[in-house]
Amino acid sequence: GELGTHLALTGAAVGAADALMCGLADHYVPSDFLDELTRDLAEGQDGACADKVVARYAIPVGPEGPLAAEREWIDRCYAADTVEEIHSRLLGSGLPAAREASRTLHAKSPTALKVTLAALRRARAADSLERVLEQEYRVSAAALSMPDLVEGIRAQVIDKDRCPRWSPAALVQVRAAAVERFFAPLGEGRELTFPAG
Image 1 (tube, rainbow, N blue to C red):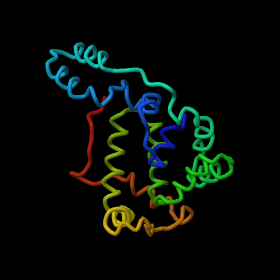
Image 2: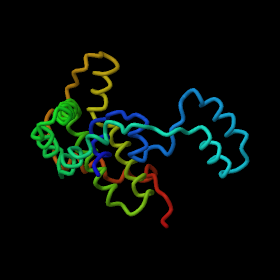
Image 3: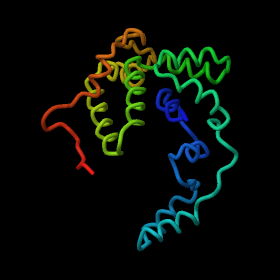
Image 4: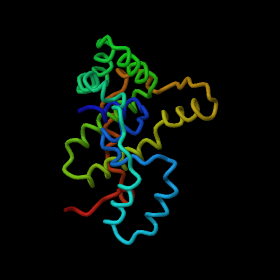
């Protein structure tokens, strides 16, 4: 579905149940057990032992997290091909949680939203994890020279006014060429590559 798209575009945090459902985690171990788990893992001899150790401390997570209950509208709204259409679907859904997601998107950098959606769609079509990691490296390196990164840090960390002035300020102003720059090769000696195969 589109749970990953929702999480990537909104930056929403997830709890244990949602992390397990999304495949972000395999087990849930309460924080009270982490010291003992770490000690027992350090004493283990091989990978098979690690699985058994984790199984001793992992507990089932119930009930379903919020994402499970919201999956229908998330899948419907975030299946759109553009951020503008996602935003429109969220607003048009009539659901309070979807409208809240729309407000969250509205506060984000328009360029970052478009680059993130493009990266997700390209990753979905990639032929290997290595190609996705190479893409992520390129996007991350390009983001370091993006004015919105500095502006976001200023608004959140330095001035703490929580009022970033994005450039460009609106989704419709973000040109395809600006998005494509994030995926361009970085140049000799700067590329992260994995061996083929």
